[in-house]
Amino acid sequence: MSDMFYPWLQAYRQNLSSCVKQQRIPQALLINGIAGLGKHELAKQFAQYLICLDKQETTYCGKCASCKLFSANTHPDFLLLQPEEPGKAIVVAAIRGLISKLNLKPQYSGYRVVIIRPADKMNINAANAFLKCLEEPPERTVFLLLSEQMQALPATIRSRCQKMLIKPPEINSAVHWLQDQGIDAEQTLLLHLAQGAPLRALAYAQENVLAQRNSCFTEWQKVSQEKACPVQIAEKWQKIPDNQLVHWLLSWTEDLIKCYFQIDKSLLLNVDLEKHLRVLAMRLDLNRLFGFYDLLLKDTYRIKTQLNKQLLFEEMLITWSQVTVNK
Image (cartoon, rainbow, N blue to C red; front, side, top):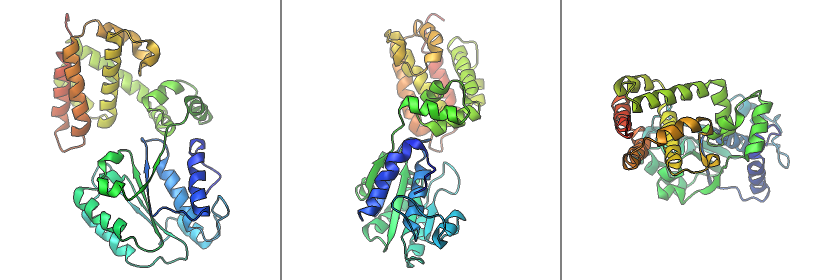
């Protein structure tokens, strides 16, 4: 595989190279991990390594006919299956289209590789159709399934895959990597917000997400103080990526619970907001706070459905406005 790669993926790359060298190539590999760790890049590197006609011990040549076709995104033995639109499901028609292509033999002498991302976006009919591929796999075909929520896949599919869990790198090495990318401030905070994922932290820095998050936190405070209307804030929040927003709300609420019980600062997820959180914690009704936290946990799943986002955020904020006492 290529020498140019994200450093925290080096061990995983070596593991995959060893599988090829020892002729233990998985028929189906489920690569799981949070967003921002480079799962897709790792899978593409492995796909090109498998497809290469003149591979070396640990790298693809980059010069053979297969490598040139792969780099041009025109290799007939490399297939990428993903939702037609971000956030949508992978439907059964897409799987049937894939199966029809797999009924043909690979056109080159190497492997044929199929990447499915995110695999957990297959709806139930698509997952059932794909299961038949795993039960009767086509010749010289390797499936690479990428997922951020492995448990969302049916157990019948998970049980037929080898699994590779991609973990966030050690914090200091991730900070150094961000510095190498030109991020010269707030690296640790960005990584905390990104759950340790360097690529997501880099995107946060480039998109000025910190400023957006701080603005949301200020509005969240105002709602609790009856200085802002929950309905108006809910309408405003619709413009923010919902998964990101719910993650912020969960982390603030978890930190509030920690502050209520006087947990040490080092254990907070939002260290930079500590003073504000401790002031809020002094005015909490703990039972109501736990009720709000339960609602947020439910909304991590409901936000992915077809429910009206405006109404969902209104419910969140109205419930939140009732959590504090002595306003």
